[in-house]
Length: 195
Image (cartoon, rainbow, N blue to C red; front, side):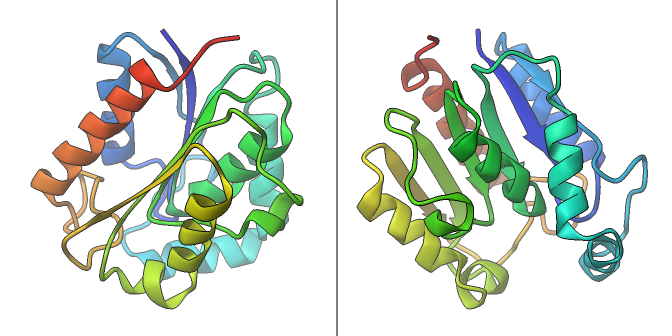
């Protein structure tokens, strides 16, 4: 059993993100789903991104950190797109992190320090033609992880959708999502070593 924090994407804490977390719970894990938007859910990415710009990335990071106050240090951090920002920061800088999973996004290693913690495995998942992942440089950051971090894996799926593992959205791809979830569950079972 692993304790996990799942950070939502720019549309908010959607039913699809909650369902993803429930899948992990059914596998026996303890899963927290902080709401960084304080109950606001948006219908399209542009609205969500505008909201993020209104409140600022610093506030997103602050809320992400506040959400884990009182939780143990030995956590796995999972981020959906925008949620990768707090997930990556905490996995990279909070002592005791067990692992990280980045969905549809990846920041440069230098964003939150100069190195990735030793023995903290990371998975990165995205569609190979997702314009956000490819054109915004996330794929380059992901490839940097694979080169520089011993336990980093990049999984690219056929297609061009961004939020493809959120079952509540039109971008959902059931086949790719099933493979992604299976890989995450195997990762949690085989790669995460509680301290």
